[in-house]
Image (cartoon, one colour):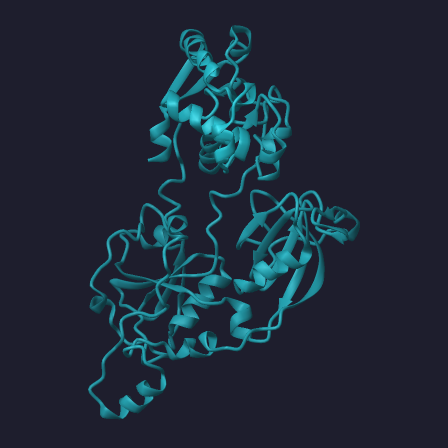
Length: 421
């Protein structure tokens, strides 16, 4: 299996990191007349961006929304390309609007009764209002789009700057990539360059990176040609912006880079296989070996749903759409199974075999049995007695299932510790 998006998802690994403030290296001035102005900017050691002062100190906005219509949505090219999330039990119109407004997006759209998409512009065609016909999962008598149809609302916030894009995150100073047009495909020349102008431009173009190189603003995604791994000394980027004297805008060879509010969704969208698969691939394991986690990684790496030999409603509600497909449908990239019988195993053409320390697998399965896929069994369950608390007899299933898979099918063996790092 090849993880095709591992290099392209650099930004996603930063979600839990405390964000840096939005500024670059401050350009020092020897002129005494600059000191009073800097003093008015706040006690931030001279690094405060005047262009951001109004955003950070703005009053709390009053969220309002206006319905703009029903729109077509293509899973491979979304009409709204910012933040997205779903909740197959509690989605409401207000929850979607509130989440998008909180992040500074201009539009909020609901689809399939349970999915929420945010964006700065609509990139889809109008559809008939009758096609947006699915009730919201979390509230009756309110419509949340339809099948590949978005009910879109325009969010009207009090502050224009907040409504447009919110804030960006300073990533550092980086050397100009070798093949600039491939690494950062969109470029605009700006005589009065400022951080805000470049960030706003790249946000409008739906790119998560804004790179300032003197008078040029470059936009793109993190990729193998522009990895953001090797930061340079920030003084190499310390060239005054044409439109904002207290900000640095980089040079032609060293770029100041910011992360915009645009979410990198290239590896988030999932869909069923476009045609029926010619072979059935089992994702086989003993319960508790990490099958669900492996499915999550496979779906994000390939963009295709995984299936299941069973049906788990809780997993379906969490986004594993392949749960509802018959395991022989051929629309999923692989099929979860814990079966150990020879007949059941030989129904597949190939297998990915997950192997985990039996003790850890048994403990994980016991936790799942009483706490769900991401919960834990209580102390009362661990101390209880009776058949409901017997998990160890299941250990006998490990050897036969492994033997059948090993002898009858083409297989790829994956150790459980490799999934958790």
